[in-house]
Image (tube, rainbow, N blue to C red; front, side, top):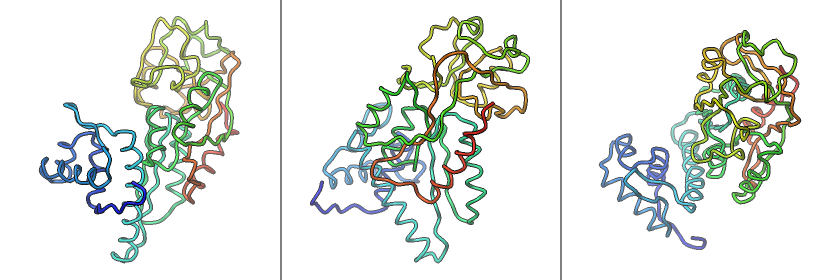
Length: 309
């Protein structure tokens, strides 16, 4: 691809991005009000011009190839820059800022995002907060879908995740450390204890976030996920995990930072009596620095480093 002139239009790049986001040419065609053959032909034309296979096709839809992920990252940048150009110099409007964060399921990450939007103050923007699986955060940063990713490192996952970061050309920037806490409903039988040991939790359902095909402890959001549990419930939604804590006496293990979630004082966090720490930080591409919006967001995140439960 280097040294070649690629005759691809901005609209064709938009088509490729839409297909990648939908995971299906048929679904993307519906959203774009195009016929499926027309969209498929446009994607094939981009692949032909670029000299690579962007998508693997199968009955279930399409999936990005490794080369396709890299291409998509650059395509997003080109389209975003063109949209800024159109807004500022053609449409005569202030430029529309885009900022995206992919993060593990942290309330403090969502609250920091709210503060970012409040402080930004401009009329035109597209902000995206994507609470998702650990491997997807890494992929989102790698293919430049998001500006940065928020996750943690610990003794149990560092070797696995560092290897993936190095492979993908990503850098982890540590922000602060947190001690693991157990999250429970306020009236839980263990809620009155000063500390809780792992063995104390055995009778109760362990709640954890779904990681799909990446279910190993290296990608888990919860510490000590490799410990055996007789009762285990995996979910994908942060609000749902609170409902299971309240309704089923379930528990989860997290940072203990800002545990109030969406239910006021109904959830408490108690220190876990185990030697481990969570080093929370953000993930960037090696060739990318924090944008102005990124700096505002990180500053908002940093206030939580002194707010343990």
